Length: 366
Image (cartoon, rainbow, N blue to C red; front, side):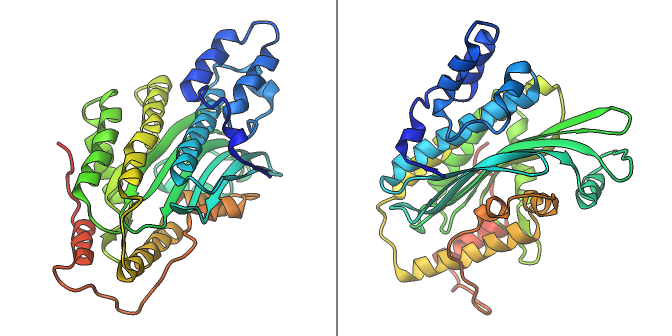
């Protein structure tokens, strides 16, 4: 276990910056030592062996691992600075079946009740349940004796603040690669960033969606609107008739126009996480709130738990994957939540206002 701000030293070499330096110097003498020095900005050493990363610098698995490690460190640094009190606890774990991960969790801080930022890089064979899930999404998978080699990696996070006027944020960016019995490889990216407020603040919603739209627009003017709609549809709690939050962007099984172009899009989305969220945190960190507002936050967190345990693909995949680290999978759950029998907020209340938006999504930017 590792703790403290020392883990964040040198974090300027993150994501694309480290990746470019790494690829430019990969064939120079002493590369291993310099690469290790550059990685001091990460929360922990990479999951994959250094020899694997050095041997295939341009392989998408290498590039994606560097991106998600850089994203993890950048977000942790920003959250820890915003909290001003608690520090992240860091666990680097190994998976017996192949791969491992780095779980970073901050609890009981000044601003954040629970903030988790997890990286996982796992490989091995898909379970039969996971294979069936993928086939249900239209994947053509040829297996031998029910086995299918895979590699999956991603960064995922859920941030639950204490103050009910600061929204919860979730993001996840991932890469998946499988190889069928005939040696054919399939790959795809998935991910997204979405916001779940307790109370509606239209200015915050516009800022959040505008920042994501600017990231998407670098790669196509249609992408934000396509993935915003997908997000509203995906984060739908069917048994409640409500969305989990105000949405954002969401995509999955993305494998066109090319691997390079999709990776660059994912990179832009990852870079938008801090600027779309931290200004909202700073804006509301000192807002006063009542016991009634705190109660409503706890009830809304109950809805968050319902979605994550019943519908979320990542949670279902993790629970169905042999050797998964359950603590990391359930990291997204809040420390506290509440369920009350037949709780209905008064008409025209602030609580009723947010429910209306959750039932009828709004286009925040045009």
